[in-house]
Image 1 (cartoon, rainbow, N blue to C red):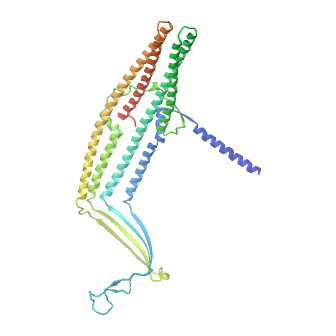
Image 2 (cartoon, rainbow, N blue to C red):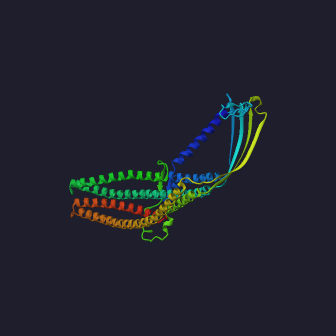
Image 3 (cartoon, helix red, strand yellow):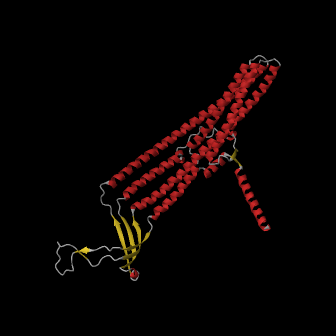
Length: 453
């Protein structure tokens, strides 16, 4: 009994330790750079995982297509017990008289037996089929399509994760600016409150500052709640559980917004765009479809063979005494001759689809060039706007500093200070929006240039 208690205690301790390790894993906080977040998303984002499964499925599709050209073997077994044996009829050969074609048919004394048991196996081997050869090429091209679809899924995931990552950085920057403004106005509010107690300033000045302080605190609380949401959005784009804790390693100052902003793309940049690659694959598939329609005009040849073991008897006890074995080999040739022009018109339809796919490919090249131009202009405008907002914010800070000095020296009014505070808050908001727009434009340009893999 004592040994059982000891063993039970050890098992309980091991289980508790295992649970503690699992719980520690769940509570672990990840400190990720944007590259770390992207790599995590490649392994956990459902859209990427599904695209990878499509590639695996394409492998099986190729093997399935190859299988149609390999030997096909099947077997069968049947057993029949005639409760009422069918009657076989025909001209009366047994009357001893000449056969009268107008006479009624007579039942034959022979026909199907009561019991029939057959075991058989058949083999067919495709020797030549144009549609099979083209189908094999098409299956490999479909795999290429799914592989490129996987790349597109990874690129889109990378873009979504990067934008969400930058949004968290910008939200943190917004809270920092709000904290700085709150600290400044809190100091001024405390100072003005003391001056009001001394009778130096009116109570309305205290009330104005209190309203501004409360508004800033409310804005900060809203920003903090929004920050939680942006973190959850980032984790969602990564395929990470929403409850998982994560901190960001990269900083805003480490991001070079001017990279590629004015650089001219090389003339073959569109070959790096997955959209162009997908359009190329679409042309290939349509061309293979034309070959498939042409191959339908060719004959197909296959070899076949079979064996069978047949047992027949009117009495079940004698059924398996005498097996009747047979086998055969042969060739089957199918030659398409005429089907009302269907094959010809199907081929012409496929040829038109090839022309349409080639037109789409050409249009994709122009569209991608336009996208690069638009992305560069948007980023350039965004950087210019960001620099202007930086200067505007610096001017707003200077105006507020001067307004406070004038107010403290008695040569300015509290209304000037309040207005300067409002202008600074507006400049902060404009700066944050310009910062986020510039970061998003940078990501869009990198994607347009085909630099995101």
